[in-house]
Image (cartoon, rainbow over all chains, first blue to last red; front, side):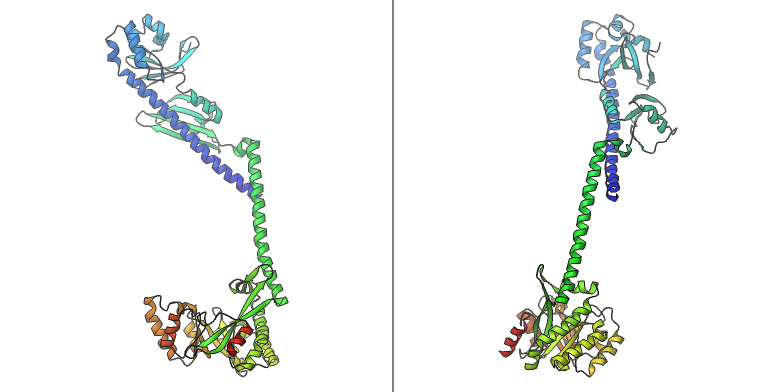
Length: 101
Length: 398
């Protein structure tokens, strides 16, 4: 009986340590992913001048957009605010204009 | 119609959660002054999978956790309640991971499964391990106690069956190189366990209260065995005894009876007093008086070890002192102990007692004794190893 209690205690201790490590890593990973996402958003926002040389929703604009968006895997889509109320917005962003705060 | 679930203004951007972009298209969108950026639906997907597999929950909010941005997992309400002290669960563990720079804090939590969620495999594994460890422990315990018991019982049987034998180590006069006496040493050769040294069975006998039996055995059998040699040659037989033996009436009676039976004069017997730590000097002095008429002599064994040696020397009427091997071992090895040795030699030279050095093993040690204390006595492998009684006879004859 003593060895059963001892083994259970030991097993629980080890499992507690394992679970605690696991959940700590889990929290760190979520934080790291959130950080990365925000950094990517800020980087893209810093590229606004690159796009401003083209008319919004023009062929070159969309090409440049697609090209610049490629290295950021956490970003699905990007729409310039100036185009939100235009046809481009309807094509690319749908109801984004309505969501805009 | 709700177009989004939550919206957080973070200064340089606005984070809109679960925004309905199109029919059946829901995603997070981040607005900056220049862009509306849609977050990939796969950005946090793996955390959802992990949350479901491990039963984890996570809440992402600002650093002070006043605002919650989004949640992952199926039991986030419980985590939120615990985090805000609205409820308590003793087996619920939480952790925090925060970034002050981005003003984001992730709180995660999960329930620690009591009895491993009753997982039959884990429980069966633990019970099996417990049984195996318990079994091995018991086996080890039984083996150790069994071995000790068997050694003790074999020892007791050896006393009853008289399975001990004796060897005798000659004691030499250093100057003349003549044998003047021998020290009786008991040996136990068990039929199953082989030769068992006195360093094992003497402590065993002491621990189990059998040491007096051993002393009686030595007196009876060593005297009987060595009696013919004592009759023929004028040498002294030394026997190791405890203080308790000397004070014991049974021991004294046995010694006198054996001497009488074997017709050995008492002055050929030297009782070497060992193990003095727990003895009372007064009792020993009193007991020694009862041996005086028999002519039996006394020696102080292992002089130089333990404590109170000088005290014992000054208070007891002993004829001989035996210097412990540890002092002899210092000769020729440790220059720093030379002053100590010189002092000791000075003291021993002035002493009107026989001085016997034990454990002399090298020519250097012998030469040292010859040069400094020529009238002393010595024993050890340099002179002779312990011999059987027949070999002692041959040695004395030659």
